Amino acid sequence: MSESSRHRIAQLEVELEVTGGAPARAQARGQALQEAVSQLVRRQLRGVIDRVASEASEGQRLRIDRLELDLGRLPEAGFEAAFVRAFEAALRRALGDAAARERAERASAGEGSAAALARSGSALASAWEIVEVYAWTGQLPWWAERGAPDLVARSLALLADAPDPRVRAQLGGLVL
Image (cartoon, rainbow, N blue to C red; front, side, top):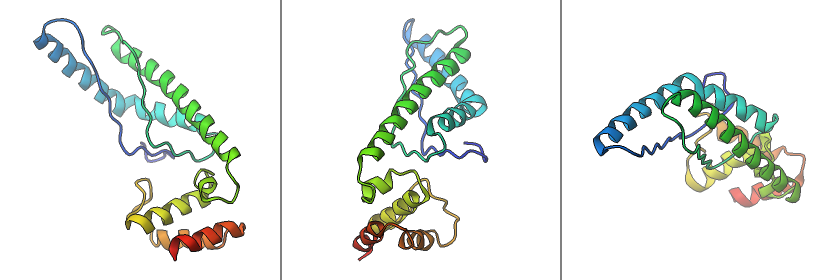
């Protein structure tokens, strides 16, 4: 993502399936299309992802572990434009669905529970995930700022100062 992006993607994979024609020709077409997709990712898709993710998140932090998009069959003629259009439409649907599911889960979860906190999309949610992942693995979550000084300590302090006593109680259970 761009430096100004608020969205982080740990890994972006694009699979292409080229059908029809002789195997050598299909392989050559596949390589050409793969290069075209690589160029699209660098030139256009990052902006599409940032824009669509901003629309879907509505200002809240969403954490989506995995998102798969099937763009269907795309024509070779005009492939790049068709790819971008199909990608944006599929991403908008998938992120919209994921955001709606996450919001519904937040609404149905108990307000003070660790599960509700982890899905709350707040600074507390980020702090909780940082502390929890660090406590269990000794590592930071993939999305955490690696260069941020005292990130775990600052996250612990934020959770310790949480207004909801249930958060503090659950924190005590995690770190003791």
